[in-house]
Structure formats: C-alpha cells, structure tokens
Length: 273
Image 1: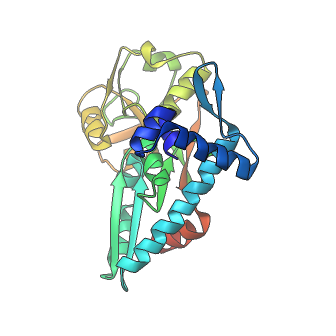
Image 2: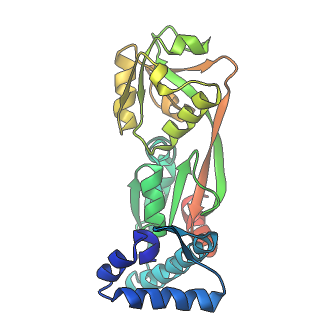
Image 3: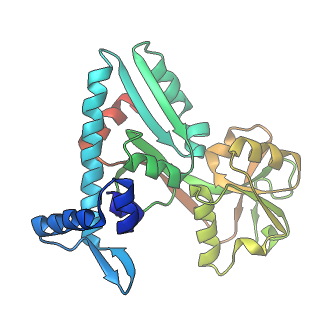
C-alpha cells in the first residue's frame, strides 16, 4: 500500500525503514502469490496495473473490518458513527437525520463535511465508516448505493432577472459566476455539462471560487451573481430562487459510498432510516 501511494521504490523503502531490495522482494512475493503483475515500468516510469487497483479495493475493505474491530473494543454500549458528507448534503440535506440520530444519548457522531476528493481519501484510510457523496466519483473503485436524486439548477436571488425562468445558454455568460472549489462534486457536474455542449468556465464574465455554500448563497442573494447547485440549496434560503437553461436538464445522484458493504450498510441503517 505504501508503494501504491508513493509510486517510488526508494521513497517507499525510506518511509518503511526498509532497504529498497526488501521492498522489491515483498512486491515480487505478492505478485507470485496472486499470480498477477501489480506494478510495471514503462521506461523509467512506474505504473499501477489493473490488478493493483483490484487488490487495493480489497485491502480497503479489510481495513474497514479491522477498524470496526478496534471500534468495538473502545466503545462499550454506545453507538458511534464516523460519516463524511459533501458540502451540499452535509449543510442542506441530512440535518434531520443528524438530529434524529443524536436524540439518543447513547449515540455519538463524528461528521466530516468536505469535498469529494478528500472524503474518498478518508474512506480509503478507514477514517470514516461511509461517505454521502453528491455527483460524480469513480464508481469502479468503491462500493455504493443510491440515496436519492436531486435536480441540479441555476441559483440566483429572488430579485434577479433569471429568477424562476428558463434562460438561453448565451444569457448566463453575461453574469458573474460563483462556484465551489476544484474537487467539489457540484463544480464537476457543471463543468462537465458545459464541456458537453462546447463551452467552459472561461466563457463567463467572471468566475470566483468559494469553498463554503452558505457564503456562496449569501453572496448570490446580495448581488447579481449566479451559481449552480442542487435544488435543496436554493429552497433552504428565503431570498434565493432557481432557474434553468434551455435544453439543459441536469440531475445528480446522492450516493452512499463505502469500502466494506457488510459493515457500512448496518451503519447506514442506523443513520438513514
């Protein structure tokens, strides 16, 4: 796993306080044991094979089991959950579930709200039991099941000329755009939708990035800027409205994502009933 992360035999040996030949021998043993090639050189460039990705996925699942064992030893009769949620979901969607779960004095919750890339890294490292992720992620690398689908819309102030209307694609480029940071699910969905019809973020009059949706909503509600996100973001603010773009109708998935299905599904049932 260290070699998988470092992609360098020398750095792996240094990190594990081993010799470089020792690392090579361990990898060769694994390859012989499973009868597959895990890493390969293309010239001087080390790359992972498809088999390395398969083994990585199984190791992540095993780590989740080990983490569950350790958790059972430390938490007596209490029930503790470690959950990750992308920002739209964490701030605007699962608040009722959080309140219900914590209404039981025997329940403990550790909630991490962050962007998709960071949450997936935490999931692989067994720092969270499961993640609830909006939009796009690599489904070949993780186990998952659907929580719900939501409309993906334009968002503006209620006084904005776009409010509750359907506008032309050319109209939106005359406005100031505010988006979430790189790596966020909502930004990926919007950028992909633009790319599919031959446009990009650079077509807008201006584009600002803010990592907090509450700040984005406050900024949009107080000036002529627009943003794009899931409908619950707009409906959670009294002074915001939705708009749509002609011939572009987007929706996104909210998925439960995990490494070990047996463990995660039981924990998800505790949280989301």
